[in-house]
Image 1 (tube, rainbow, N blue to C red):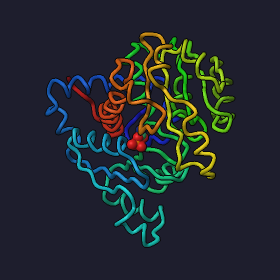
Image 2 (image 1 turned 30 degrees about the horizontal axis):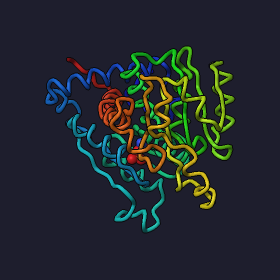
Image 3 (image 1 turned 135 degrees about the horizontal axis):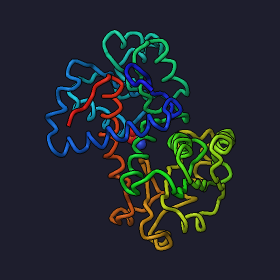
Length: 315
Ligand code: CP
């Protein structure tokens, strides 16, 4: 794909070669940051990027804004709509059309599924989706893949167990699809019945890739054979029924006892934030890579932004 001028709304906007190109660029950028970060500081110095977070975020917003700063671009935007004219009733379309007068690219998170695609269509400038409702979070998937590549040396031949809220968890929706593009992948989905991976997605992955998928509510067997355990938060904010949330919120907890069952080199990933699903007792283990995973959001998002602006990187 030609990256320049494109929007990235869904992981489906990217082919396997596209993904590998972004990850290769992220590696180059990571090396440059450690050697001489000043080399990158002039790359996008004439660009303004709008960071529009209609929903709460720590990692996605701040790693995007770090990425923007490290590329020398300027960032404008908001975190929450308090203080914006959204509070006066301005529509998403009018907000987006206005901001497109000021910025060369939009990074946005919004509770409404399809909102990022809509903003890309009405503005005509590149939009990167930082999460739209329970739908898609493509840059999280890219940094997840980069984390896997760095820790496992390959994106093929892996058994990945996804645990927790697989129904509302947009990170696992995007990641499961992306992993299905690679060879010899074995996916295990562990969730309560109420929070199963959407059937349309399981069917699509099975039909397109033919990879092995196991769905279960039992975590013990799954973790024994996993190379990666990808844990998700039970998302209180997505539950229509608070009673159901309280009943399900501690169904699975990754703790020292469970870690005693896994292979020595099994890694524990989490898009964060966590609540109760990973015990802080395991944070110091080498297997626990989730904070480093959050850090890798910076080079991956720098890679994507630089490609969408059509910049080459010399190093
Ligand atoms: N992983 C992730 O999307 O975290 P934030 O909600 O803090 O951005």
